Length: 127
Image (cartoon, rainbow, N blue to C red; front, side):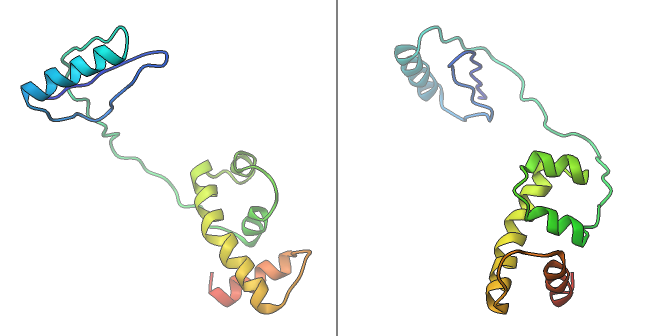
């Protein structure tokens, strides 16, 4: 049996179905009704989350893009500047910045960071 509880304004939404026996279901609903006001339960069909085929063109990261990741700009600002998704910026920053700063430390470089340093890093890494 599939059950979803939809709620609004400080209520709870269980997105994924929870499999329960009839007895478990009754106890769970009783628990929810005791602890939360105005709980309603209705049977629903599970909605498919498939989006179909999505085609995206891979945008190559340039030295300028990597250098931009080092700026204090927000992920949203960089997303707009580079034409990439916010998630792409987050993921690239998460992998690039720690490695880059570790490399800078090994090389004995100090601030300010220059585009020349970024180019050297990319060349050494074969990126």
